[in-house]
Picture 1: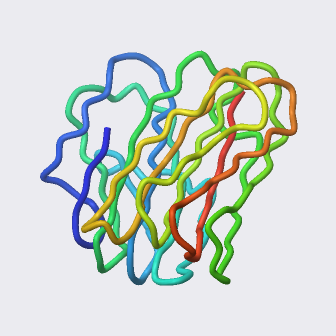
Picture 2: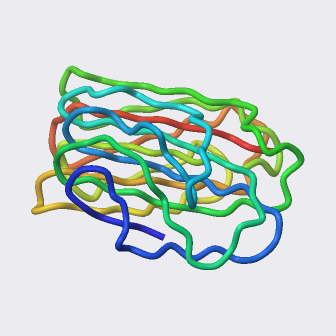
Length: 193
């Protein structure tokens, strides 16, 4: 589920979640300052897994919460002042609601590609969040099945995206993000078993 807005992507977009115990993961990709903070799910504080800080006028972060809440829920928070995106996911069948690995990687110098490595295990799930100064990036994994990328492009100017990769194989797995032009890149990742 994706929500787009200027500044922090709050309602009016409705994000719908299914019933039962799950981990809700929110990937925030705000443009401008400040970075995302105080992220909530229906008023309950989410836990920050990884956050890049504002680099090149953009940031990327991942937040999570184990919950049984379902139906139409509001993701709240603050941060960003420009065109921003938020992607929300559910994880089920996990052995621990907390990620076993988190990391960030930033290339403030301009480049068109950047790779972040994650020590994957068999059947884990990796989620990533990123921002660039280009649109429609590709994200490929060095081993295992293809990644699924959710991309939001604004005015053909910036890319705000997240990705999921499951089931992973015993790693490490490199996630290579490639764009069409040279730009600074912000990446945040978290992995669950």
